[in-house]
Length: 125
Image (cartoon, rainbow, N blue to C red; front, side, top):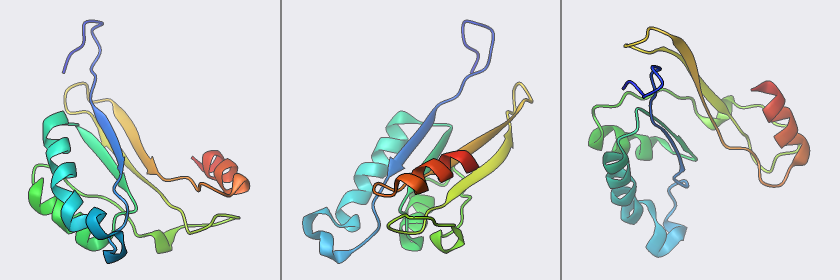
């Protein structure tokens, strides 16, 4: 989409979907997924990233949002410092189909407790 400044722009969305666990009771994934699917459909981002997604959640999103392609790795591919859990940064190199410019999309979920982990994660990116 061409902006008034003569440059191309696009919409990017990020969402921590929280992993799927039955311990969430009334907030479990089966009761939350339609909200997220509708949010993505209504906002129509060109790119979106999710955090904490498990394979079944990715499957649900792919099934409902077939116009989007999925790229990612599991958290077992991550590196850790003082983080409470393993962290990843998924990235992809893309080319805008209109301007032909190359750009990168990074999606990550920094640790909430480990200061060193947050600093080192930011340094890597």
